[in-house]
Length: 294
Image (tube, rainbow, N blue to C red):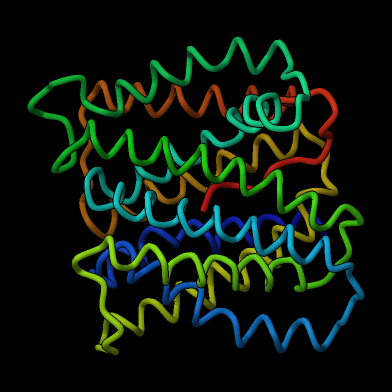
């Protein structure tokens, strides 16, 4: 049952970048309404299975949500520049960065695997960025790859704080609700930096944003948060590859995203690094597995 829940959750969030592209709104607009539309549903789920949490845990979850807001903005920008598939692949590099961020912030030493995988992943990201080739997919492939990398780094910080807010791994929507609310608040501060941001409700754009909130932010994340931390690392590492692989498939089918040969090689290199880091771990004292990227 846990495996099916994790699989269903990963399939659900694999449509995240697809919904963002279909909505065709500015990056901050997509991030704000993705979180805002999700909050009422998470409130209902939380009240149905209430679990008491300390003020410190709630503040940690909200703080994690602030990082999530930055992450979503950078990731949505990268989708504009390099498409849904490549942006999702690079965003999933957070599995590697978790160990390094924990080293800098929590003084927890990364594993040797994390040190070894970082150069491999950086090479893959460079290939995805097009390395100056005219046949590279994307309007601005290099900048898109850099934005997605920034998203993966901020997402790793979100994961560390989010875990700290729910050490008991209680089956509750409380931590996700607090984090989503924190992300929505962060977006209000980030929105003025996005010249295309708008509170106007338009269709079908907001229909896709509602689908993004319901399918990915609520359903997908609830399934993942409850299942993946309870699976062995090796199984999780395989599942981590499913989200970007599926997103590339959906993007190819719906938007005809056709990658250059170096970019395909970069995808394989990055996914190999993610699989290795997921299977072997990226930091010594953090045993819980990491869910896929945003």
